[in-house]
Length: 230
Image (tube, rainbow, N blue to C red; front, side, top):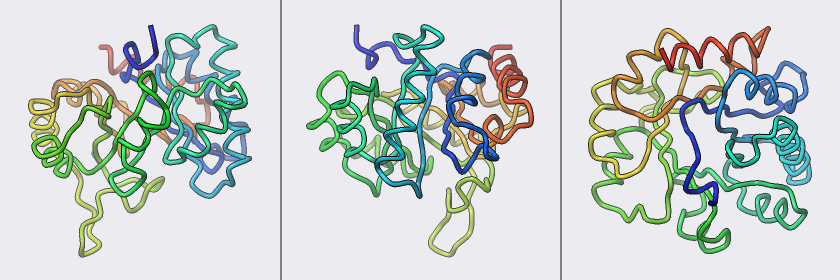
């Protein structure tokens, strides 16, 4: 069975070299997986393609090192070209994650094939509109938020006036009700948020600095997983 039909969004790590306080990305990924994280996205906005390919190889090796290549999905943010190159180099990258202003999901699906995992992120209100008006058949999950303002993506949730608009639990509950696809929510998410977030019905949470920037990534990741499942 392809990863497209069995991925687990419940504990989703977004990570790049700018998030780790100088520590190797693969080390942080390994600690998160050991703590129970289930999905990894490489997001390196300022890196060249060759560097992102190296990060993808290191991430895939970290996942394989824990014998989780068949259960933990690995995607790359935005860069369809890097996903294609990585696959050509026999690196196990399962798909791509894009925003509404990035390469259209239908184009990603055309080049990556029917078994790839394709995620789409947008503000929650935009996703509700998208679900009601657009074809979602090329997409496998939605990334929604931000739950809180976040330094790792300072423009997340920014409206036309430059104001950050965070999303309420009621909005997330509404998105869960109308979405034909699973939903993962992030943006400044902390352990204390997780019981209420899970109660909305969404399928998981994503974090960046809460694990990648933590002094003890394993401990931080373990607490997040515990809170989600409790």
